[in-house]
Image (cartoon, rainbow, N blue to C red):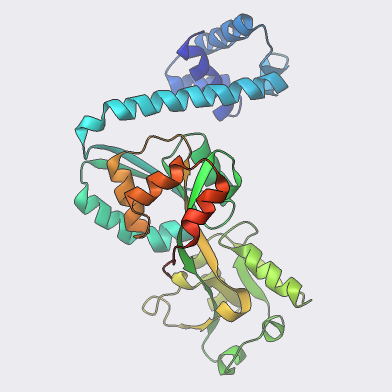
Length: 323
C-alpha cells in the first residue's frame, strides 16, 4: 500500500469521479491514475468504485469506508509537513472557507490586520454554503470554516462561538413600514419579502419566527448575497430582511434599516476546526483577531476536551461580542 494509492483515490472522488480531472490535479497521466486505482483495489481485494462500463460513477460501501481512511491519512501527512515547517515561524499559508456574508462584511478588516502582522503568510478565502465550508474543513481542504448555520453538524469538527448578530428590515424611503414605531411579523407578512436562501445566513431563524406566530411569510425572492437582496429592494420588488452587518450608513443611505432583533432573535457565528488539526501559531492569532475571547489557551483546551458536554461547559460562560 502506497501513499500514491491514497492520493489517487482522494483525487478521483474530489474531482467527481473523473480520471482526467484527477490526473490534471496530480500532474499524472490518466493511465497512471487508473493503474493506481487498480493496484489499490487488488491489494485490498475490494471494489472501491461503482462502475458503468469504463466510467467511475460513485463509491461502493467499502469504497466509502476506505475513502474516509484515505482522507485521514492525507490530512495527517499534511499536518506532518506543517509541523516540519513550524521553524519558519510567521511563514506559511492559511486557508479559510466561509459564506458570502462573512467574507464581504466581517473578514476584510480582520484579513487586513492579519496581513499587516503576518505579511509572509499566504491567505486563501473560499466561499460556499455553510455545509460546503464545513465539508472543506472536515476534509482538510481548509484550516478554518466560518459560518452561522450547519458548521457544527459534522462529527469531525469542533466549533467555537465567535460573535452574535441580529437582522434588519431594509426598505426604500417613504415605504409604509418606515412610519411604524414598532414592527410586527404580522405587518411584515403583508409585504413581499426578499431574504437569504434556505441554509444561508441564519435563514432558519426567519422561518421559525413566522411559524411560531402561525403566519405565512411572503418570501418572493431569495439570494445568498446581501448586496443582491438590497438591489431588488431598491427596484421596489419587496422589503429585505438582511444581517444587520450588511447595512452600511454610507453605502446604503438610499435605504432605511429597521432593527428586527425582536422579531427574529439573535444568531451566532462560529469558527470550525478539524478535531485533529495541527494549528500553526499564526492560525491561533487569526482566530483571536476574529473573536478576541478565543485566545490560544481556550482554543487548545477546547480542542483537547474529548467530552462534548465539557466543551459546552467550557464555552458556555463566554459573553459573545455583538457584530
